[in-house]
Image: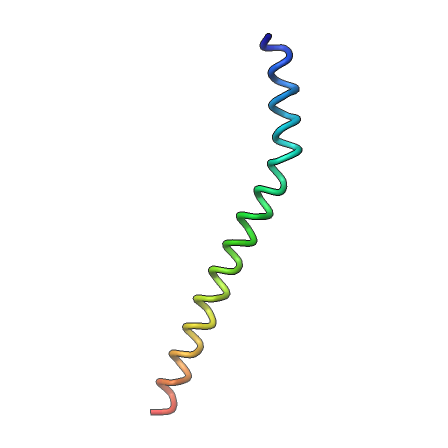
Amino acid sequence: MQGALVPLCSYFTHRHGLPLLIRLGYRFVITYAFSDIRFLKVSRSEEKE
């Protein structure tokens, strides 16, 4: 049973692991970009005053 389980696990990792990494990285980049934009807006509005 364990011999069949290892290829199955690696199969699922190759099938779903990469899209999961891309999705996580994508979410991280979006979150980082949004916080970066917000920070830039704040620093710009502070410069005006």
